[in-house]
Image 1 (cartoon, rainbow, N blue to C red):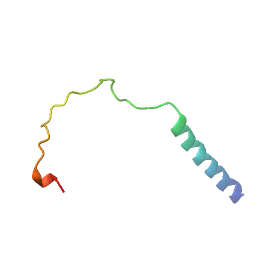
Image 2: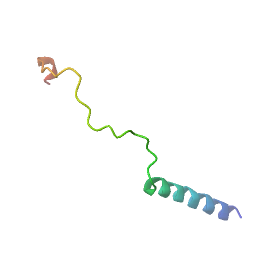
Image 3: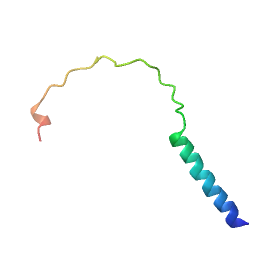
Image 4: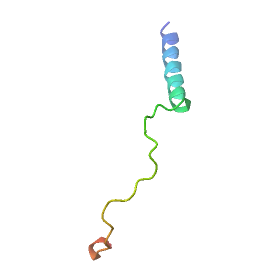
Length: 50
């Protein structure tokens, strides 16, 4: 009895992982495209060189 419950739990764990990996995505990211750069440009300094 305990072996069948353990086997059932392992199979449920593996099948849930499989469905999570290969199932449809549940992302809610907006389709906004590429964002423009609004930061400071990089200035190379002597301290940055190793």
